[in-house]
Length: 233
Ligand SMILES: *[C@@H]1O[C@H](CO)[C@@H](O)[C@H](O)[C@H]1NC(C)=O
Ligand SMILES: *[C@@H]1O[C@H](CO)[C@@H](O)[C@H](O)[C@H]1NC(C)=O
Image (cartoon, rainbow, N blue to C red; front, side, top):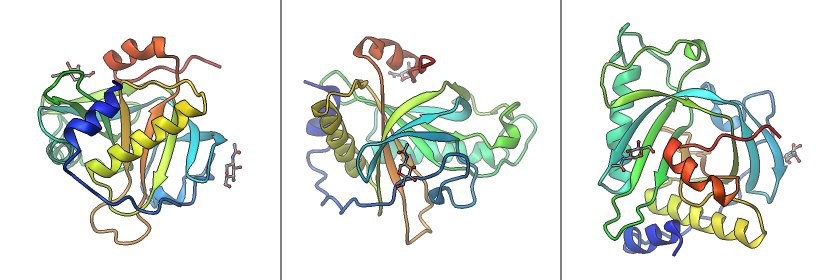
């Protein structure tokens, strides 16, 4: 059984959530920041291909992220724990006690458990603002680290509204199925969620799931490094 499917069945079966109508304007941006980043720094990407109205293949530039790993709890709890650690980091819990601007999106790398206990592995990350990309403040909390994320090629499915663990999971399962049916090479042992909005934004909310493009042979490596480097095309 595919890990994502396993995660869905075992962990999210009870969390029923009606899927929202997903139509949501895609990113047009290449150089300029897309609308859903609003006025926050967000990582640069180019759109390689529009696959449907809501699904794109994007190429992200390499960049630094502040990250923290949370395991052994469900998605929403893991994200709350990780978010709080990272929020303290940007509020000055770092060596120079530097305040760091909030960015978008907050990504969560989900490595679904292969075993029976759903001990999923979540890495919650904030993008480091452009002004600190070359020398991010060193985290004081040893659970927080600076991740050098390589360039990534990802299939992105966008949706609006209020995303929860179960809505992200069903989006990831739908996207996986759609891409596999269309014969795309994808990495299925982990995926990312990307949330762009604080709870205070009531309208025009934007959420994404990212599935890495790549050959299944990159799977092991991807899981270990947390990200698959895109071979220079
Ligand atoms: C993708 O769609 C957007 C919006 O319709 C368009 O502006 C952009 O040029 C398209 N990109 C590609 C690579 O086809
Ligand atoms: C979670 O994933 C990270 C990154 O892939 C890895 O370093 C860590 O050992 C994993 N932790 C657990 C408990 O599986």
